[in-house]
Length: 324
Image (cartoon, rainbow, N blue to C red; front, side, top):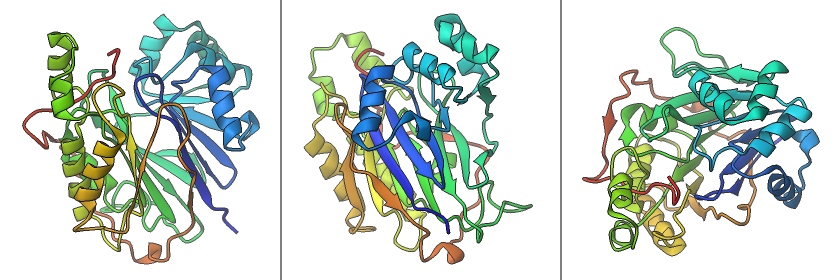
């Protein structure tokens, strides 16, 4: 019998990002933005040891998403790391531990729009997004069971009728059609709600940083993220998603209550029963438990839009990390 999946955001914000997903005996770290000691403590706080980590995957190479000591820990424990070839090219010049991982044969490469079979029960679909670390990716993660089927000709690139699905996008400057399509139908929508535009504009940050934050290669504002949430939910069916997890809030230019209000307002007309969880920098979120959804056999997932056309979901685009 397939075990339930467990998903926890361990840390989210400008000082470090990491999440943990476990399904059917396979444990995945999404980003490595905490040093090894802090990550060990966060995992321990949710009852997880390093022995349950099977692999790690990187969204991009900003330093709040990887730490050298954590790469070293993975190398010592012989845990493979997935990333784009350009991620590893950058990190090899910045991290001695990345060189050790390569020498140990622990690097795994993924490509845009190519399904990653992490194991027989878990797949990942990378979606390239607009952000000022090239390339940056969001992920759709699908849990499979014996009733799920692999994609075939004229099907979506992810498996049909997954037991459950997660959309994870921690850093993006603007929406794109491909992201909306890929995230439609997920059970957990984990999406950046970085900042409030007014707080950003009235902050005492340098003008160059504010301008950078408000570019389409920065981060999403609460308003943008709410509009993207509504666009994804509008393409979903059967009462999905069950959870909206808000990621990467700015400590200077946002407030958890502002992000939560924006998220709830986006959902109220479409999915009022969706639970809104606002991730924090210093403590893990509640652990979300996912089992095979009752409507999985009837799910009709949309086709992908390979054009990946970028589009702003408001006039200006918000919120970079405090340091980037």
